[in-house]
Every structure is written in C-alpha cells, then in structure tokens.
Length: 255
Image (spheres, rainbow, N blue to C red):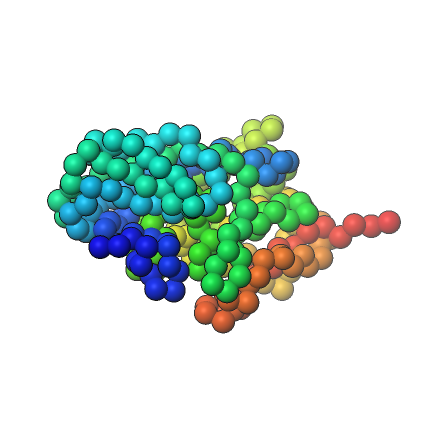
C-alpha cells in the first residue's frame, strides 16, 4: 500500500494505512514575526498491517515525536512528510497516540490549483485549510476520506481575536496573552469546516453584512472597518466548494 497515492487529486498527501479519530492541538502564535510554537496529539487506529506511518507537515520544524502504544525507532521529516518508523509491524486495528512538538513560521503550500494554507495579512492571519492547506500548521493525515474530531487551543496576544469554526468552550484572558479553546460540532476533514477555517484579527474588526462564522461570536468591538481581501489563490475553493462565506475586515485608517 503506497501512502503517496492516498488521494489521486492530492498526490503526496495522506496515508491509507491509518485513520485519525481525534486531533488535540495547542498552538501559541505571535503575529509579530509570524512565529508558531505548537503540539499536536493524534489518536490513531491502523487500517492495515504497517511498520510505519506518514503524516503531512509543511514548512515547519519538528522538535520531538513520541508514540504511546508502539515503539518508535526513528522519525524523518522531509518534503512535507513526517515518517514514523516503528519497532515492528502493527496489526490492523491497533490503536496508538502520536504526539508531535513543532515550531516555525507557517505559510502557504503549493497545490494542483494554486497555493493554500496559513497566510499572513497586514495585521493578522487567515487560514484556508481546504483542499490542501492543513499541513501548513499542524501534522495530519491529509486525505478527504479521513474525518476526525478536534480540540483546538490557541494562545495569542490579547489584542487579537481568534475566529474559527466550532464552539467556544473556554477562554482565559491575561494582560499580554489570551487562550481560547474550540471544539467543532462534528467530525471533519483536516481542517474541519468551510473556508476560511481560521482567522486571527484585531479586536476592533467586525463582520459587516455577514454573520460571524463562529457561533459563540468571539469578534468584538465597534471600530470602523473596511474589507480586506486575502491574497491566497482561492479560485480552487470557489470551484470545488462554494464562494468564501466571509472576508477578513480591518479598521479603516483615517487621516
């Protein structure tokens, strides 16, 4: 079974030998310098006998990898693929937990119809994870048939607000940084939901003429705003899914 043909549309993404039932993601992000420090914990079930697993992770540095439920001999991260070589073959139906610590400056990655993923804006970030941008910010099994549940924790500067698909289940605010916890309502792809999947914007921004994409309405403030269109090539998203439901808004500068 070749992991590089898991999805004929996205050759080189995904691995048919296993499925992820849950992603637990803790992200610490500083917009100044576009620096991400994160940990991802994946609950995995093997679908075929295998002695290695391959995850997708693009443009970020892997710091450490650990596996519970199997012996990890070594790991190799190259060409956007994180390969875990185990101590011996696992039978189909085996369960294990993989933890990956990583960091770096995320960006977009190329795909068959353009670039997608983590994109810096003038003052914030927007992430289009469909159809191939999820590996730009967390290790995943990036194939459309592999749906999973998520818990996503994001810590960033208090001046910013995280807007994402899902239910806001926790918020811890500090003077310098704020942490939010999100849980999508149902299993989804990597990443769950409709694009744009995640936005980081100033508190003064709000969405005009559109409902907030987050049911818990974390966007706050009454600042004057103007439409800020992301530079990501989102033509493929419009053709394959539907028009982007919202646009990132920012304060209009006076003077």
